[in-house]
Length: 230
Image (cartoon, rainbow, N blue to C red; front, side, top):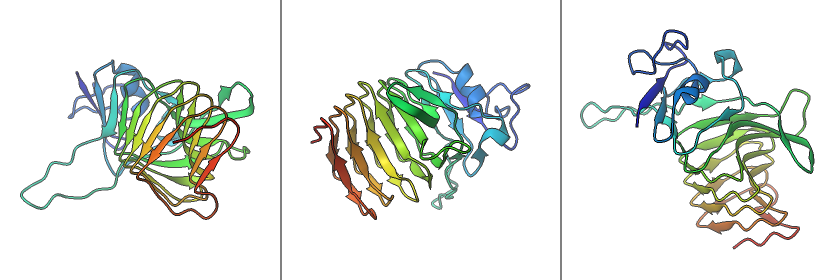
């Protein structure tokens, strides 16, 4: 597949091609260009938000990868730079949920979302509707990301979603790290939660939860409705 590069500081959506020397400015433009099997590499330590020109929610396409640009090491000392930060959202209607959600990214089947940081926000004037990644009947792999902010949740799963969520860190004033709704079957492993609450299992969801470290202020794992977590 192709690799498309994004750099919010040096990129340009009009003249850029997505090549490493001519990157796009926005993740939005790169994702719009990418196809299944392609990879979008985002420059680390930069911020990607509405001020940068991002159009939320960013809708991934099946089979693509969204990750940080690889840091090339010179010798034995590997330079450590922070992950790219994605912040922002747009309204997304959900049946039976009057307020809907305010997601940054809509996941797709067989996509990989890796090594990104999400600073999650609620909608302007909205209460508790912000979420970074929304899996609405889709099954991405979400790994090695960090989720923080003051909002509803880091990841929300709906419908018959079967995402794999592993090696992520959920922190800050998020009401929940992960909310599993609908008849979703997320696999949640090797994550760290220090959010207000950890994992919310509700409706008819069937999450598989293993090897996580949960140190939350309120509930670690909540299960209600017809939820049947393992």
